[in-house]
Length: 60
Image 1: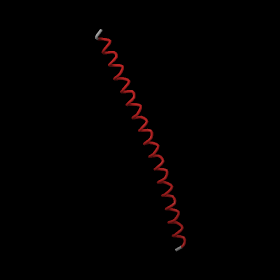
Image 2: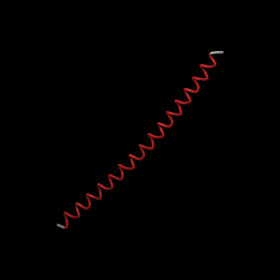
Image 3: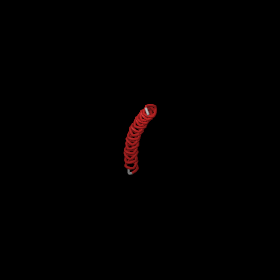
Image 4: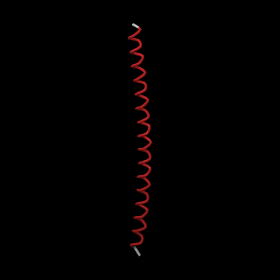
C-alpha cells in the first residue's frame, strides 16, 4: 500500500542519514587518531634526541 511505501521510504531516509552521521564520526575519529600518532612519534623523537644529548654530556 501507499502508506507502507511511505513508511519504508522514510525508514530508508533515516538509515541513510544515520550512516552519514556515523561516517562523519568515523572520519573525525580517524583524523584525531592520526594526529595523536603524529604527536606521539614527535614526542618520542624529541625524547630520544634529548636522551642522546644527555648521555653524550655524561661522557665528558
